[in-house]
Image 1 (tube, rainbow, N blue to C red):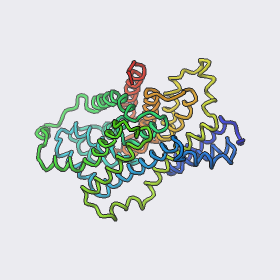
Image 2: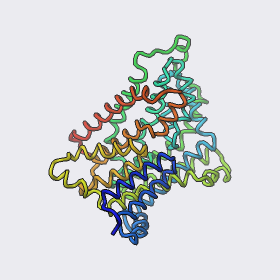
Image 3: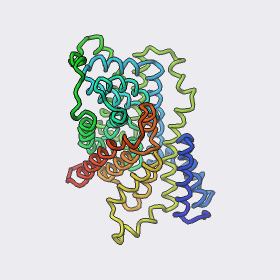
Amino acid sequence: MGLLDPLTAIVVSFCLLGVLLYKRVNLGITLTATAIVLGLLSLDWQSIPIIAYRTVDPSTGDGLLAISVILATFGIMWLSMLYEETGQMARLSESTSRLVKNPKIVLSILPAIIGLLPVAGGALLSSPIVDAEAEKLKLKPEKKTFVNVWFRHVILPIYPLSQLLILTAGLTGVAIFSLIMLQMPIFIVMIVVGFLMSFWKTTVAKDNKAEETLGKTSSDLRDFVITFSPILTTIVVAVLINVSGYGFSQRGFDVLIATFVGVAVLALISRSKLKTLMKPLRGLSIYGVTLAVYGAFLLRNMMNEAGISKILQPLVLNGSLDFTVLLTVVPMALGFLTGSPLGAIAMGVSIVAGFLKTFTPKTSMLLYISAYLGYNIAPTHLCLTFTADYFKCPLTKVYKYMIPSSIITFTAALIVYFLPFPI
């Protein structure tokens, strides 16, 4: 047996997680170390290597799914880093800004496009563009920060290549496109709320009104189509595999296969040499993010073995704690406190799993949105802190827009959860 009872072990492990995140230790090392320490404190030490292997045991359904999600994450990071390495990301941003002349639309679209690439603190990539376009609207620094952060992350609830969405589907066993269908109305609400919060009663400066027409030059459109094609191809292939009926999505193969198809397309359109394609693989960041996904699965398994969910079970069964509150408050608090959506999802799933025979698309959706929103407004959220620093704006001013927008989004998620949708 371990040294401590499950509750004490999880508190100690959670404190370690917070310290490591505060010290900006690599997320992969952080989650894996937290899982191992939890095991050391609450389990028979000899069982830890067994659990570590069982997490990725290809002879089991859960292990095979974990391997697929881990490799898909590796492929997504490779695709993301290649976009930067080959210069295609810059071409994509430039072609979009030339095609769309309305600064409000540019401010909404460009952070979202750059948000397709899962780079930690990646809102800095779009900050200069947002700054230039926002000046045309005379936006204050806090609104610039809100626009950049909100629209960068607005796509994540429906983006099939989102690491958080892939991990949620993998941990809960729910098909990723079932989650996307449920979260589509929430995504629409986020766009509307973000647009109203950002541009209500804001007009384009007179000397810029001539630029509001849509640019239709064939060269700009061609550049956009070519540079966006790897991402588009990846999404289309994932959808086609998902609807093929062969059960690939249940094993996580849909996104895995599609991602490497996207890498191949990017290699073709950029005409990159092998040395360029291999350069991202020589850095540590791609492996750190990949390890983070393994760490999330390992942490879930360690928490399950330690019986963490049984701690709260009596409170739910006797009515002291409402299940919906558990499903929302726990992942939201974890996302806010840790600034790590992957960690919040991993621990949240483990805690909630004790009360469910199986996750449904609705329970998975609500858990996902709660963790996502908690993370989105967290002061440890790198995109938020980096952007606020770039625009020299205190977070307290940004929260005037972030918190109301998040409350409205959360309300939309609750409505979707309680409405009798057939999914």
